[in-house]
Image (cartoon, rainbow, N blue to C red; front, top):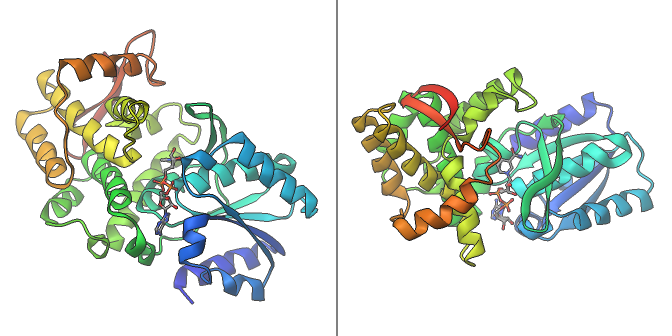
Amino acid sequence: MPESLNVLIDFLRQQNARQVVVLADANVQALYPHYLSPLASFFDCHTMVVPAGEDSKTLGQAEKIWHELLDKQYDKNVVVINFGGGMVCDLGGFVAATYKRGVRCVNIPTTLLAMIDAAIGGKTAVNVEHVKNAVGLIRQPDFVVPADLSFLQTLSTDELQSGFGEMIKYAVLFSAPLFEELEEMDVLRPERIRSEWVRKCVGFKESLVAIDPNDLRERHLLNFGHTYGHAWESLCAAQGNPVPHGVAVAIGMLYESRRLSRNGIMSHETCEKIECLIRWHFDVPEWDEQIVSLLQSYLVQDKKNQAGEVGFVEIAGIGNFRTFASS
Ligand SMILES: NC(=O)c1ccc[n+]([C@@H]2O[C@H](COP(=O)([O-])OP(=O)(O)OC[C@H]3O[C@@H](n4cnc5c(N)ncnc54)[C@H](O)[C@@H]3O)[C@@H](O)[C@H]2O)c1
């Protein structure tokens, strides 16, 4: 049995859990059908499979799950276990936060992005029409199972890159030594992702969440790369050519670093280092004037804007963030 499952079983037993409901991403359930089987020896365990992909992050899907929980007469003591990437953590977190005004919730992240980001911090949401995360709430999971890196072996290259984009972000914000280690990696492969890198990133996010659980100030730092990144993600999706979130963030970081360098906040050398690492692992599109003007319509809708000004995270050097600023 994987060590992370032992840890989960210990947690559930300490919590006196009796009934657990696993919300499993369909791809993950197909790849790892027996991963959670040991739970059945200890708990009354039921699995619901959620179709994979962002299209499942809807109120309709949440409602289906609420109905099934009611049909099976689960009470407030049930524990919801989300088994998958960020999609299932966001959806399942939302269902758990709202069912009977809130039941306990555990995340078992299976993508790199979920391990270092989406499974931590309590942001839950569903999309409404084309608006991402339009409805949701912040409610901390009761437990996040420590990352089991063996899941990365089956991730697609795109999804691995997506998590790696977020990993670069943490390094730029918080740790020059981590940045240097990432620079030394020649090819991005699952087995090259070190567990201590994942633990560091989890630690960075957890400490910001502890200071600012409701995402009012300090957590905004985690938006580095997201101002341009979200705009790029939205534009690509609108053009029928979606890019994974963390890939868009990587592209966003590159262009935000150039902007910081132009404004004299970041040195030219630092900007070059960031650009070089991102170019090594990602195909970076050149944004011509036409693209920049298309991006502008998304930038003006960005949630980080204040009083009509587009908001950017300011970073002076690697591991040396300054502020979250509008400009
Ligand atoms: N709550 C937060 O703080 C937060 C932060 C970042 C992103 N998000 C959300 O997370 C979602 C993106 O998360 P994601 O990138 O993990 O996407 P995802 O959950 O959609 O997973 C991506 C793909 O990988 C598959 N998959 C998952 N684990 C796998 C594995 N081990 N092997 C093979 N395939 C696997 C999934 O079936 C899916 O097809 C978005 O909805 C985003 O809004 C939330």
